[in-house]
Amino acid sequence: MKKDKYSIIEPFLKKEKKLKELSSEHDIPYSTLKRWIKAYKEFGTKGLSKKIRSDKDSFRKADDETMEYILKEHKKNPNINITTLYKNYLTAFKNKNITKLSYNTIYRMATNLDPFSQKYVNKNLTNIKKPNDIYRISTEKLHIKNLNINQGIATIVIIYDVYDDSILNYKIYTGEVKEEHYLILIRETIIKNKIGDYLVKPKNIFIDDFKMGNKEKFFTILKELDININGNLDKNKEITKFVRFLEKDIINIFKGEPLTINYLNYNLEKYICNSVLKNIPEGNKLFDCNKLDFLLESADRKVQNYGIRFKNNLYSDEVLKGYIGEIVTLRYNLFDLNVLKIYQNDKYLFSVYLTDALI
Image (tube, rainbow, N blue to C red; front, side, top):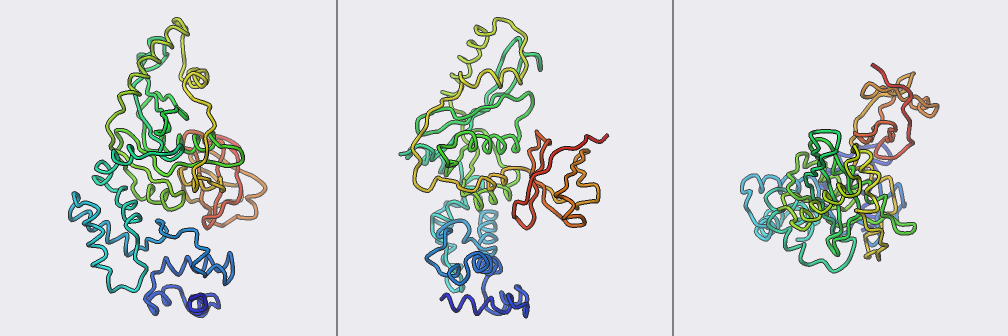
């Protein structure tokens, strides 16, 4: 098998044929050939051996054709259950010369499409046997009379471990909480709650009262981070009770003192979050911190002589001079533009910092 794979991609490596030609010639998905080439460049011929693949039975095995089929089936019948979907998939792909996906992989793909998620989420929540496996995010209105905005009304977002309801992180916002707010909070939570030398990530994150907008972005997160994000849960009544108690305690603690959002976010940390170290379930370790950048927003820009101009800000640095005229990908926190993380061909290069705010 190892020799066969190399012989297939060899013409591309020698620049004799294009990848699309090889895909058509051998009836192998384009995405599969790209994986083989990447594995060969990183590990040599050993990289083409099945036994060292880290993405076995994972979302990475889903080729473009399979994804297209899942989307079409869901569009035809939004209420189809996953068992029926999987049987239909096996029948449709029976004679195709590609690796068949497992039921678990199809399930993980499908649960990113409404209305699959609502039907299966509650079942998952009752089968938790270890910490750091499933996180849940709840959003509640926070009513504080002495808060200096919006007539004393803010929004608090709380992320907690479903295993023992321990609160891992929170954020108080003044306006509507959007998709990008959740993703930034997830990223900050994983970085904040590392154990020893390891970043620990959950396998699933459920967001109460949430409907995905950019499904493609969530598919990318699942593919790159192996974190499955679902929405459309009912609100957690226990979190609602907690927030009502929190409101009373804030009044008692600050006794009418004028408050700002930044002040609350800074001073409530010890009150809200549980600083308890937990055991790491096997498979939940995340070694590459840069992978969390898939939770950030992204945009492509051409590097100019003066650096990079982005959202009326100027970023200049000596390291950018080596990339003048080239297209790079910026990954950034929409709510903190002081730093841009620079990528090219999905590889992290360096970070650049705000030089000047342009008008």
